[in-house]
Image 1 (tube, rainbow, N blue to C red):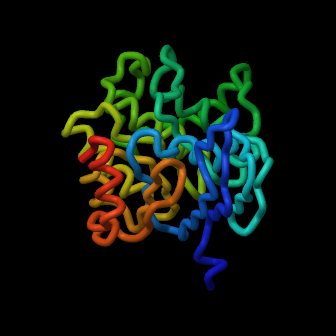
Image 2: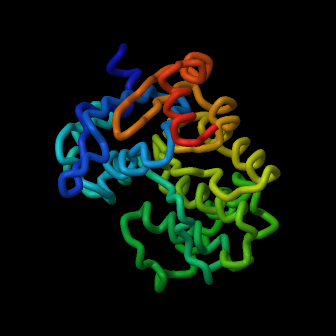
Length: 252
């Protein structure tokens, strides 16, 4: 049962950069169909950890298993094909394509070929129908034909989630989905994350503690590249070591 429960597991994950240890012996276990938050003060190693899990960085030591399969050393593209997809802290969309076209490009990627631009209208029309479904799912129907560059900042986040969903991931990694958003957008994106997590697993790096408290089933706290604490928000938020780590770095 435990094997079924765990979708992503990292053991002894370590990353050194020229003698500086950014992530040190991190053990992380994410249960299927949960929202798991990775938090910690600035410089705690959260984004490095994220990059290791999706192999945008290669670990110095440690192993990563996804769905019971050792994915250590696999390419980011291969990992995405297995069903583990990440959205980026910096919006990764094509600015001059429309919202619909951005999602369509992501759908083409899922088919294993990004270069369908010269494909028949029929193929593109089929992809369009699915693209518009995804656009609607993230509340962007009114913006479907707008170039992505003209989208308000918070809506770009929704587009980014739509393009990640186009890959049909079993698990989504969200890197600071609330960064730079105003209160209204935060509410909207939080609702969206809860909706998209219905049939999948979400691991997110997030600074906004009220969002973390509201959405997360489980929280892992990193400090100086090591796991400081783990558990539900109620236990983690009152953990003296966690409070000290945040207070000590000027974060509330």
